[in-house]
Image (cartoon, rainbow, N blue to C red; front, top):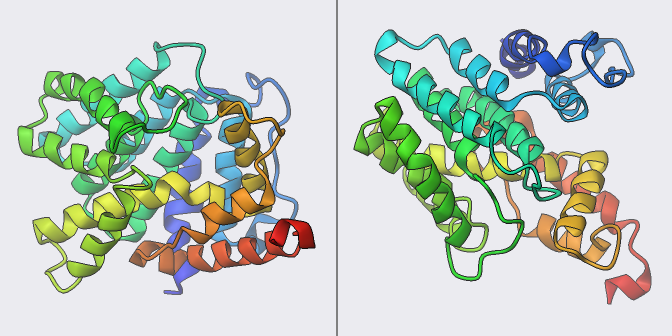
Length: 302
């Protein structure tokens, strides 16, 4: 089966079934018209179809609780893993009932996008349903009550997210080894201190059996770091919007991050997972870099 046809099983079928059941995506309840594909769906790559679903979620203010529970239920895990779903539900409820004055970028919209990206990458990496569920819950928890600032010390904000999440996981019945895996995934999202070693561990464990615990955890950690930045690297429109929100969150003088700032970030990123390779995410990043570089003036290039 061609990769894109295989991918459509995770994108056009189960993902759309989940997102279109979410209350915010009901056209009768939405605040305005939902974005639509510009060309017939059969002519759109599965990855772009997935992106359209994600854009619609942001536009419609979809409920994170419904998204997380819907994705976890869709994994059809055995009853013995019901505590994983319950942990995701409790964390999503905490986010929904949390502060209303959220940062411009690190808010429920960002969490929803990372949850969707983690779900997608986990399935493409062919993680088990259990390990994909852990990844989805880690995505939901990775920026809990984010202060809208940068780390002053390594893992500062990521550690805070873990400390908020862990009591909910214990309440749901998570075992300590499961909580430790989630903590490792969240700590890996520290861009400066967590991502580089996560990439190294992923590559260093590829020789192990597919279900080896060390290899699985390395994959989960890397996939969450890739999910965290996927849409900033996806295309010009996503990058433009998310960069604008980040500039607002950081109280920068310009409406958007400068082209050098955006290129500096994009050039520090690399998608190396099997899932990302199959989806062509690294090619997308490189195409975006080339497009932004073509807009640079001689003064900006200095």
